[in-house]
Length: 479
Ligand code: NAI
Image (cartoon, rainbow, N blue to C red):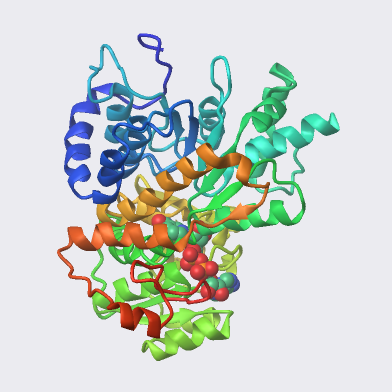
């Protein structure tokens, strides 16, 4: 705690550099800046206490300061152990008007390279407010939401959480933290769960968890699925990945991608961006899919569609984008080419069997540099694993660039305002934002790029049965 502000970041001395990059990012985030202007005199988030769990990057700093500009109090943690940009975290703590000696910004609990214990500690600190608890959650991947739900569940059942040794390490650490927090304050999570008016969720994996909770009737508060705003998943997941996937591979390995064979597992929004970025560098891209529709899309886009087993003998680079688990097993890894590169860009590391790799008989690990490991099999063959199997674009590089995140985060801010100001209109279900707002976010960014939009005539609008001012598509339209 410095000057009444509690926080945990790597080094406040990095704040000045962070502030410079935040200033540059603001220009590249026209959606967020437009929302600041639109709400300049209204403060729609006055009274909101937003607990945020989302990669603590420069772009997220602009999001946080937009929430503050709209009147919110905010506490923040990252949603991944490797994704924090320490200078951004420092700058947010210091704030635009503070100094490292007298920070005046937002409490952030995040640094690059947290242990799992530290990660859950940060998430818990972010959700622990003096006085009244948070009343809004902004989540990416659903970990903050899970902590509140699981905590409430164990409190209601009166059971002390204990992990099974077969549980993944991450879950064991999570339950350990939960047991400690319950021992310290027995009603804590129930109270937080009751105080939260709603959650807005950033990504595919977190949205899946929310729909599962809602289907089981267990969702404690309303949720807005930000991911499935068109201006989020069809842009961030795709064009963001197109930029940041090869950024991560290049910064991690600096291996020439042209001429190599790259396998992309999954051809959803992220997979489409991943395949395009690798092809853009001249790689021959092979796609694996379980869904015939996405597989056919990949084929039509000119990629070979293969099973992983059949693709591996040729593969120089393997990237998972599925949001599923056990996609690359340790047997797959053992059969990869010498010095093949393996990385995941889906939300959780369980797409790759990292635990199985660490347990493989005779395996050795050489740390080349942070977030780049060479694993040596007894055969003498090695593979290079990026970010220990966690999302490599944020672990090895700096994630998506500002402009595309401005689309995603504009939807986040709109969703926060919507749930905070109108929560009584929402049940404990998962909702999407109206298409009109999606079109508004797109328009701001199109204008910033100098795009010219054609205006419908009244006659034309009637002919295709839409309003001249939009929305321009039916809800079942897929883009
Ligand atoms: P999506 O649902 O559009 O695509 C996933 C695809 O993987 C689907 O087409 C599915 O059929 C396929 N798939 C599932 N199991 C498979 C298997 N065993 N083998 C091959 N294909 C399989 O999801 P989206 O939006 O593309 O997101 C994917 C993941 O990336 C999620 O975990 C999401 O949270 C994460 N994400 C990561 C970002 C980053 O910056 N690293 C940005 C956005 C999303």
